[in-house]
Length: 192
Image 1 (cartoon, one colour):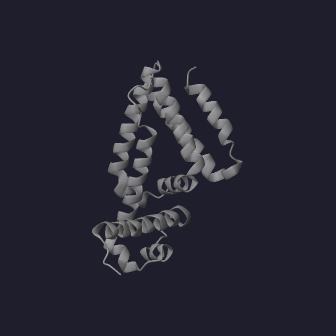
Image 2 (cartoon, helix red, strand yellow; image 1 turned 120 degrees about the vertical axis):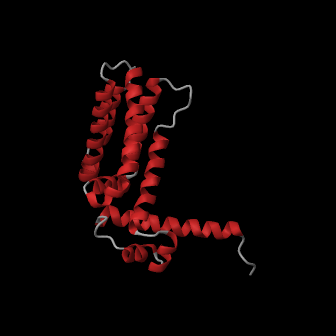
Image 3 (cartoon, helix red, strand yellow; image 1 turned 45 degrees about the horizontal axis):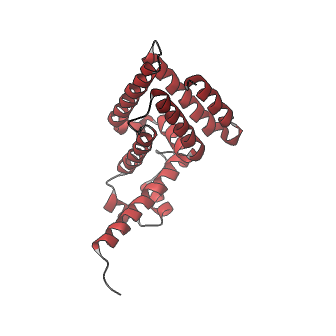
């Protein structure tokens, strides 16, 4: 058997790192951040506790890696082609957000869970504030371009509505009328 190439070693490192993140993600979402130990993450990932420390300095570092992935997901929602009109932008934002809520229920559960665990979010506050500010600016600009008289308040309102829909889906599961809510929100915010 020939030795592994540097590319193969890097792929193995990335797979192991992803295993750790995925295991921690599931545990943080279902058991809570505070109740999840590094040992539990190692067990769930099928690796040794010591190996985790080869990739992450602490449980908080793992949480930050998860948060960075969530930021990337959020950026994909608002990655608009240059030729998009304000209507195209709001439509894409809403459709991708609803798609996320529908297909990423564990991610939504984790987001809600973390929001209710101040000890978990304290170290993420600076990153979270920056992301929220960028999103608010973007949504405010879209609302302005769509002709709303108070674009900042409208952006806050739409954000609150979408947060409520996410919370409803997390708590009610398949009983939440997600398709109907999507239709209602699209009718209200996407001009014909």
